[in-house]
Amino acid sequence: MKKIGIDLGGTSIKAGVVDGGRIVYKDSRPTDLTWGFEKTVDEIAALIKIVADLAKVDFKKCGVIGIGSPGLIDTAKGEVVYSNNIKWKNAPLAKELGGRLGVPVKIHNDAKAAALGESIYGAGKDYKTVALLTLGTGVGGGIIRNGKIEETQVAAGSLFGHMSINYNGRLCACGRKGCLEAYASATALVADAKAVMKINNLDGKAIFDTYRQGDVAAKKVVDNYIKYLGEGIASIINVCCPDAVILGGGLSGAGDILIDGLKKYIGDKIFGAGLIKVDIITSRLGNDAGIIGASLLI
Image 1 (cartoon, rainbow, N blue to C red):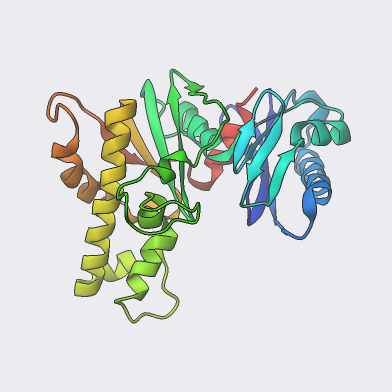
Image 2: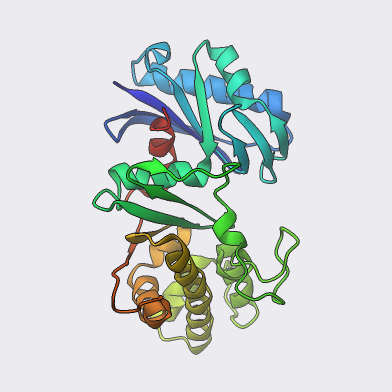
């Protein structure tokens, strides 16, 4: 049966009709943070109707509609408890959207939804337990065990990003010091690079491209980034014991530079190094992971 998944973010709303892990049709529109909650729900409902119509399916026959949303999520109540990205607090998303469409709606954290998509249909499908880290504006993620999201008291996919790798380190946007996100997000990487590199329109891709060209400053920035991220991943492995760690988000496109560097750095930092095997791999579904994962929330 075809299903509908929504990936709600601070910059865009993406919707897709999914059939067996394959997106039949998808569309998106920019998120306007001035809309407020009610207007945003209206826009999501309109986008769902558009993708369903163009995919030639009746959305009311697609069963439960799934949504991945940033922030702390009360999955039982269907509420976005708090989201800094879209400026919501105690927002009854499932109830309001379901009321507009006349169908049941299930919501979860967006990073955990993406992790579910990768686990079932992407890079993690051959593993029992996977940890996904999304490396973008922030650092998010989730744990999937035996095809199910590992639940927490309030569903949040950003908690990996807020483990401390330096108790008296950089100030994070969350207000704490030394968070992984303050060192290993794309935002942090670009900030570090701007301090030592003179490149216009600097972004993650440009930094790694310059690294490949042998630039000394880029090498220093990237090597430090790998150490920061490696510390976080080593802690995740030691605490959560996944079979594989999947890297998603824009920076995962760095490919072998990132993966090979992390494998080398993490090697002796895992408890029982050499006795357990944890694969470090990149996302296979890319930006579609959120839509596909959301469609699986039912």
